[in-house]
Image (cartoon, rainbow, N blue to C red; front, side):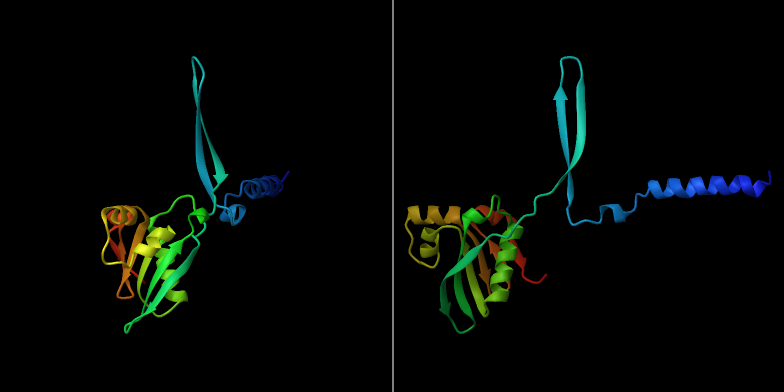
Length: 167
C-alpha cells in the first residue's frame, strides 16, 4: 500500500480529534460569566476539594430618586435618596455610578448629596445639627458631589477618599 494511503486516514483522524477538542472562546461565547465555587468536604479520614464553575449573579445598579432640587448660580444642588431594597451590598463603585448617572441624566448638577434614608435626606442640607442628627448622617450619608465633578465619599464610605467624574 502506498505511503499516501496510510497518511490520509491519519490526517483525517487528527482533523476529527482537533475538532472535538476545540478549546476556543467560541464554546464559551455566551453572555453568562462563570465564577469558580470551591467546596470542601471532610470525611473522617479524607479531605476532598471540588471546584465548580457557576454563573455570576449580575449586579444591578441601586435605584434612586431625587428628593430635593435647589437652583443655584453655578448649577443645581440635589439630594438623592437611594432605595435600600434595590441592592444587597453597596460599594463605592456603585455610588460613583449613581453620582455619574445623576449628573448625566439631570443636568445641570453642581452639588449632590447621596443618602439612603428619608430622615438623612431631610438633614443633609441643614447647617445646625444636634448629636443624634450627626450620628444619623454618619451612618446614612454616603457621597457629596462638589463643583459638578469631585466625588467625596463620606460616612461609612469615607475610607474610599475622593474621585473625579469622567476619569
